[in-house]
Length: 339
Image (cartoon, rainbow, N blue to C red; front, side, top):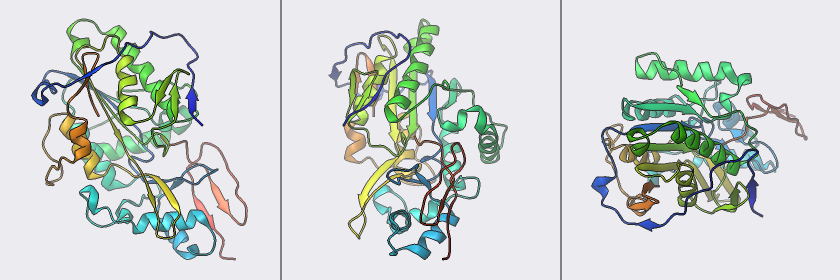
């Protein structure tokens, strides 16, 4: 079934899009403004989908508990363990996802450092926009924690420039639509050269969700990252001079047991490289920038005069003692009893 998100207010009709090829050197202009939309869960930590429940945080504590229960008929424990063992060499990384376990603050410092690298690369004329559920008033302490961690990595005071609206989001389609609302409002308020030179970079796992079978505003089908990019492009008016890329930090794989596993995989190096390439910067962390076929496919797409390149619900407390209990709007901490 197709997940649908309908808007509660009127917006401009999306512009019609057609794709044509443009030279790569035309894609990055040095005086562009940049809007960087940042999610947290599934970006600065790894989130493991638990069907029927909120995603589970891939923390050191949860991993230890999962290791104790693996093979005992607990699907979540098996999924967490399989994520820890998954080799990520194919994604320009060394080792396994275990390197991305998060601390008690639900953040992986390695991944926070990578986001800091991206923030440094975005240019002077930019706006960093928090799109995560961490933007909501009840999560102000979590937001402050994140800003303090980014301050430490950047070596200068940091705070988010803005956040997307507090509208209710019931899934990936609503997250995409919320970001579209921001882009539309921004472009309507900016005129002339400001509107004509704009980069939009979205880093999001969209709630550990594959971008397929979605519908934005009840009429725009989303079945790929490119579809989502084209939708965001359509929200920028005629889109002239607007560049868009979505970095979708999502992976699904089959574990050795045959179980299907879906994760918000964090800001891996392949994602960071692609984002830095979009911003026209060099390769990160002394790693070699590798262009795979996926990134090449997204290099030379232009929609409506716009070059296109190319979430996770709040965690819940869950205590497993043969049953599951949820407490909304809390960081998820999994605890398995020893009995």
